[in-house]
Length: 124
Image (cartoon, rainbow, N blue to C red):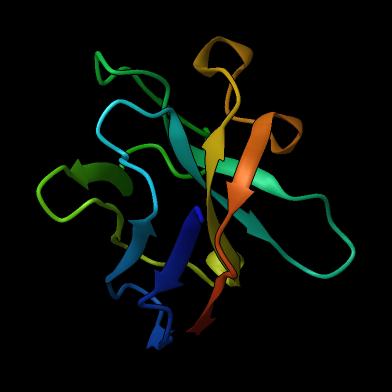
């Protein structure tokens, strides 16, 4: 059974850093297209960072460019999202998801298996 477990969310001050983790079981992430998404109440889920294929091509939303870094550890079967220079607008529920097809982009509609989410709250 495929499963993704998200962790690492916390309450942090603006300007701080966090590392979110997405641990996979039941399948290997090594060559999967996968990404991190975030959602706030009343808004659509936004793809913020994705690895689009086995070649490591990445996508970042404009709002997080230069502050967020997605990576994966094949040995640990885990994907990470390193977040720096946190802003209050980064407050959201963050979830990882595998993608049906990396060519279809870092979008919610392209999400396949989803983690349960981990909450990030940034205080100003």
